[in-house]
Image (cartoon, rainbow, N blue to C red):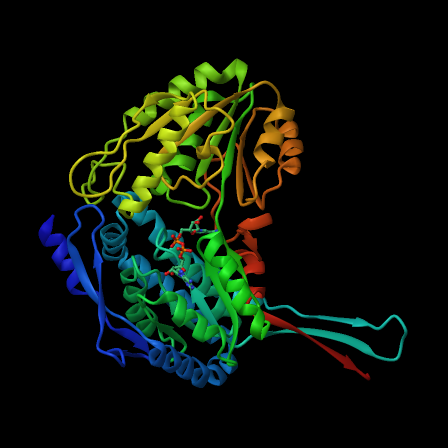
Length: 486
Ligand code: NAD
């Protein structure tokens, strides 16, 4: 395994990617990126400061006129090539994700495919930037509407999907004709840096995408938000940081697509297909070890089906093998850091103190890394923190409920509104309930929602705007209306 790691790491660039070149920071500083499963250092990455942040916007700004005026078909072909190259290098890219994030290799491969698919989807969507033409109702002129790239965009991404959350922003931004400055999460910058040579090889001109890792995220992003050449900030991360960025973005009235935190309910109705619901629960809970904004965070199960669902689910959770993500026999890797693991532990202890029963797991794994056993908590009391806060770990708290109405009321009782899951054999009942759920996305008899062709995003404090689908590209465009005297 060591040899594979060394080979994967040798090829990862560790500088700042600005104007199509690898540059060292203005102040020669670096920060450490480590393997969360072992604590070993993986790389020393260049640590950008404000001069580097400015140089990145200089490059993006200089590249903008050429990129936005390139024939759309040509831009689309470049995006399509990025998709192909990512799939060619799938194994390398997946190993990098596992090394810096801790997730199992199977999850990392799925993430690379998902990330690559954004480039393919937007290579197709780029050519469908449709406008509109209509008669003014008062007569005498025409209303002409077209969509133009917004300009230089700042993209800020989290550590939990270090490749896909970048791709979900870069692909539509480029398809729209924008140029970008990108700040990957400080814990996991390597996956974004590994994308840079692929973009260059595919033909993305210099300066169109600039990738600037830093250990001083707050100051660097704030600098971008006050540079008048930057017109949009797209952020994926916690609601808390999103709120801070929204306040800063107000100074220059920036456009602000935000993909923030979640607290997804997973509803199992009494007529659900139990094996299908258990399969869906495993995906919705355990993809990424629960470190996903869409992760099922709380389970509400109708009383008559509670015992059969819970016993089958516990059996599957118990069978999950925990260990280093590069070992293909493991299903559950290390959580990202000690703070995340400690919070998971705290939430479980709080639930148990309030009367929850530990049906499996319920403890950390000793030794290096930040492993936590797959855990199911039964009969969780409604005042438990685990039902209210993002768990971001492999813990499934289950509540027994008496009716559908109670289920919907409990599901909606949160400041978040990203994703919800619902299992029932009765499709019309499922659709009726889906309409009553105050969430941006509802998975009906499915454990997985994410799809580049679908509008991904939340309501309430889970965010603003949508990523993926044609809506995702329009976030990066301004609508222009031209009144034409015909
Ligand atoms: P985070 O908010 O701590 O960090 C996200 C990014 O912001 C990172 O690049 C980080 O370095 C940067 N950052 C941190 N403080 C900053 C500041 N003051 N100013 C500017 N940038 C700053 O989030 P995280 O811990 O990396 O990711 C986990 C969170 O992301 C969870 O809440 C999860 O639900 C959310 N998330 C949401 C989605 C979605 O699509 N809605 C997807 C993935 C993750």
